[in-house]
Image (cartoon, rainbow, N blue to C red; front, side, top):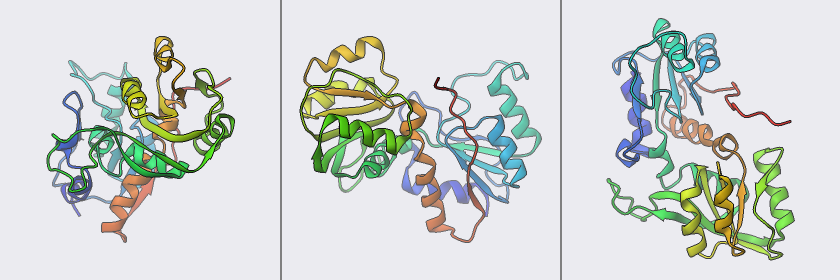
Length: 266
């Protein structure tokens, strides 16, 4: 099994053409023709993830976030990105990233969030009909919006979020004293989806990385909740593992146990 054969399986589920223009996806390090001894699937690719790959004898890391995002002028051990690259190259480990290609997939990052919360009848919050190849059901695009089977209070919904995503402290706009039925979600940095959530009539918009002025956009019509970037995308690696094990069930595929969340809570 070569690197290319493994990544072809991933691209059948989420073609790289679905990635946003600003992104850096695909094979970032390594030879596509290299024989794969094992695959380690992670959210990020940091030094501890590369070390885990070495210990588990995996020479291909499939990560959601790309470790190389912008141009590199040199590679020295003075920066965490460079140290990851040096270590991976030294140990002949290939690194592949999907990022926004999986964000836009019909059953990608935000869909997985919704599934964990029991959201039904999900459709894209920000549909993108221009993405090719097209999805026959028209479900490509960022974010998801759907409904809870049983409406809940704002307080109960916040408790659901904490239990599901494990964030110690949730940042949110003012409670509106209304029942939560229609839920909009977008994994990762999702401030750009607030207007779409309002337009769609969502009761709550769950995302991450909201800034101070973003909360004013709720304007007493919407409950905004920031559950944390890592927390919102933590189940992404489970999607990738499912895609691979469905096609190559008897191959060595490991779910990374390394914690890559750079944010700590006090």
